Amino acid sequence: MVLSMDEIINAICLHMAERKGIPVTEVQVELSWEEETGYTAEVWTQGRSQYLVESNMIEAILRYLHSEYNIRAYRDDVRLELDEEITAVVNA
Image (cartoon, rainbow, N blue to C red):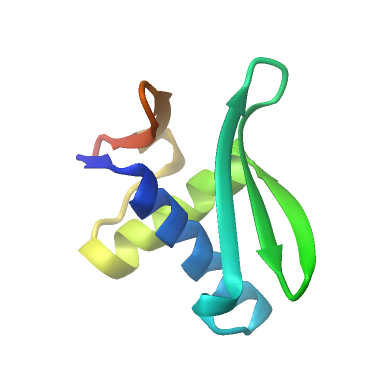
């Protein structure tokens, strides 16, 4: 299974909204990849910006897989890839 960049963003939005107790519409996410830092997500909530590293992104994806697809995956089952956009490859 492959999650699109939009689904990864949705996963992070849902995850951050739940963690902060705010509506999902108040969360904005921008994904990026850089050679020095790898995969990151910049998240804006309540007028503040924070960065999530790859492991935080995968945690959000795992929760999304369970809530949206009823798939119980593990950290080793998810791999982020970069082609024309960032995708998540799930082997579950």
